[in-house]
Length: 115
Image (tube, rainbow, N blue to C red; front, side):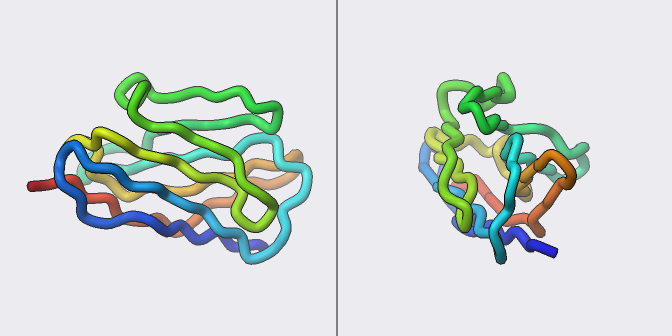
């Protein structure tokens, strides 16, 4: 079973930037979509951004214009550049990969935006 591992989280001041990466322990075939979700304290998990194999993207309204999702390669299938971070972006961020037959999730990386 392929594992996903996120990296790039951390503590950043408001207005700062972070780049999240998602590494796969093996090659994932037949990817149909990849994305990032997040769960803030006391809240439900929500979709942040998703990109299809065809390159179409969709973003949560709260991050449009600030976050950019991009595709990588088989070992690092998806990235997300986060700019102009706000305290309300504080959450655990999860990498997500969907294929024609399976769904993969990472364990999450903490992003904390605070002065």
